[in-house]
Image (cartoon, rainbow, N blue to C red; front, top):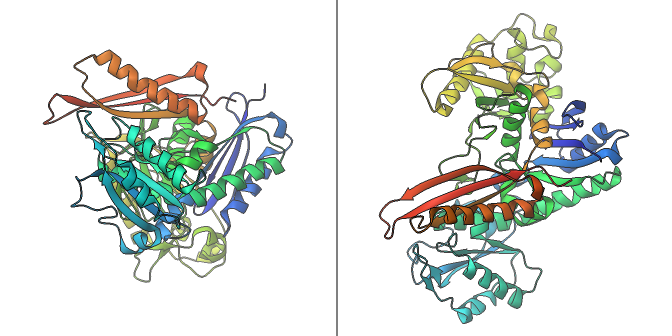
Length: 506
């Protein structure tokens, strides 16, 4: 049975790929600058590592920044009509409230609040079917529909009912994003997540098509996966439906890869690229998830994302005339524009080479120049990010990964030790290659009635999502159970989250 695995991670500066053997050993690796067309870089990276092993590859996992970049740059986003199932409640805060003007202009295809919804205790207000049909008749010129119902995590039946009406009125091919499949507790944040998800279908779908075509071109029959925000994998079918869950895959890949390379289950991880530095945390072998809602492109959401502090510091960060750091970066043009490579732009890489921290390019091109004040400022930025990520007092072990980590010193404030493992610069691709397939479920329940039955119901929901994502049903494990009591509810209610994961079904 074939058991080789390929991991690919597309960053803003470099595209990295690895081929792992049966026991997880590194058989091949490649690292090339990301091009103007990142999809072209995926195909080249794949060809560089697969060699003569195409028939032996069981899985190929891709982490990509396409979705995140589309939101941050306000480009290639689909227009979305929003259907909130909550009227006559929630009228005081309309969909798209608080959105940045330019992002709303790119996505807003109309928004309506129709009668319906579910109460926290499970009571259901009937959906006004005729009102929904009337709204949908005005939505023919959109790229997707986002549907969000109040407390739909407890009972999603009305979101499914509204989705059926969309297919009836607008046809079976209209993309639909359901809030309960994307976000957590909190109607507005869940609705925002559903809207962003619906807007990303086109761009992520295009990446998936190119990815699948590249596999066919190289004769690879292994199962394709995309990496998602929690450090696990999702099938391409699930990624088409839930593209927003690929946004944090890059940071999560690096964190998972750091754990694999060091054998640590708990540590802080610093991933330095060409443009930015991400500081995250390993918790029981997986990226620690943010306990708070995540602001994405200026929009508050509540879907699962890794707990990461990012600073505008990388190997390509441009140093200003007064010694200021960025935030601009030469990015993938480092080999052309940095002084140490014969260019005319002063970058963090030049400063690191001058100080003896890094060896790259031609140090003689720098002469006797040195920039200690720049390095001191950069070290303070990273030390502050470490401090913000720690949950306890005292120093903690820190793992350095990413090609840009060469700009950092041998010691950092807040770190009990700095570990830079072998192959640290391809940790993100390794993290992608070794990913498990997971399912998450979140419900609000009265656990006082039958606690064990309630937990099992949520676990079963999470397991079903893991199977839908492509997990091996014979090897599923419950990774985490989180329970939080909700204040001021009668009867007493609890929020229950369960994560189930297992190896890909090869």
